[in-house]
Image (cartoon, rainbow, N blue to C red; front, side, top):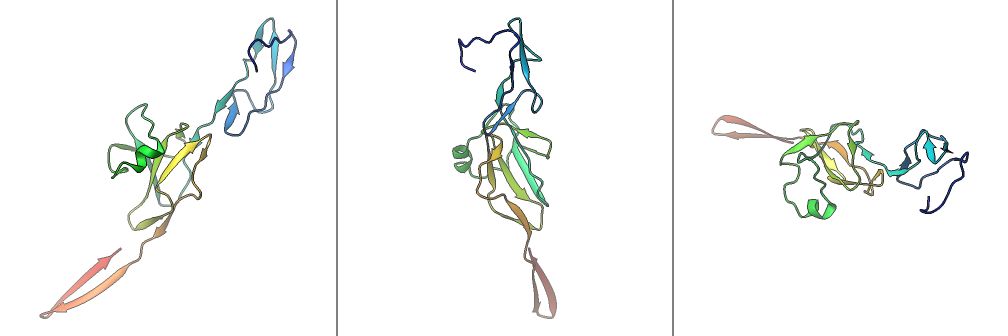
Length: 154
């Protein structure tokens, strides 16, 4: 609501928030002005966090430094991200707006898609979500002077 806009006691409002924002009240809830105060509380639209997607064989991490948000430009300019002090994330972890997280795969799987994802207004700012695909298995046999050698490449 605009500042300096007065609501008369007894007024009931229902607030709808724009994309990427969520209301601090229950869905479809109303708020009522009672003697200059909102009941149950003043309605506010708040930026929504993102949630870590479920990806089979996928690992999501972000820097462990508390309160540190990494922008996309910082991540793109940072070689070796995903190999420092990072916290592994799970599906219940809320990711704050603007935070970039890193995606990798379990051993034996390769990343298909982006490895860095940025949370923006409750959604991941990527054209497609990453996946883990099974790595190729190459099997070589070599015989040298009567000795048998095996080489596996994943």
